[in-house]
Image 1 (spheres, rainbow, N blue to C red):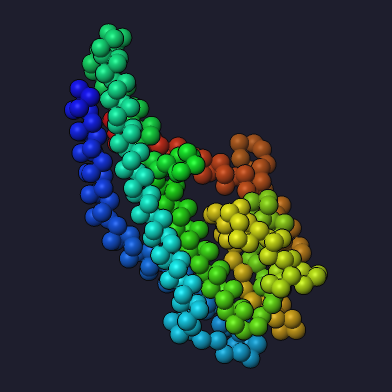
Image 2: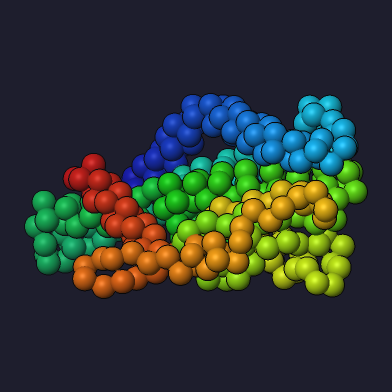
Length: 283
């Protein structure tokens, strides 16, 4: 029994790898397309600002430094997704072994009949299938992990490209965007000016947490930034508009909750819907 279980687990692992290998080439091409389009779109706005300031920046495909940033972002995210598929295969193998062992124990102990034991095993597999295991021990659903990796990778790469152009053009100030439902730690700096050199009177890169997972351009961050020239540019957001964005509430089940809390509840509902779909597919 132990040998059979080990052999089947090995076959399962190889099968998962074969299935993901069929998709890896397509996903690599899709990532390259997403990153390139996002980089070009982000620069359309930046280049317009630089030209209005009398500067003449190179297009993305002609700027060696920006092209290196774009290529590095693509390769990093492609590598991360390939790692996720391998950890998914390992997690699937581990889940199968544990579920099979539980079913065997339940049957041989006489606690459950074979049909019930198999249903219990299937339920166990459903609960953990499609998960990735990080070196830290944290587990995530594959859809959550992939979405976070691609969204964050695109955002960080376009942010780095904008930063590279700002350095090339001698632009010290960048204006961050603002939106409804920003997480509280981001709401305090959204729509503000950031000095890349750390000039007094402006936010610094450290103030917005640039380069950290929880800060600007970190995990699932939807903020962006654009070059700002004193005497030429005008603030995109008034103080009143920023207050409106931060104070936005939603009426839900007879109570007023913040827009941010509403988005968190919505994501929770969406996760439960996906979990139910996985459960139905598993059964």
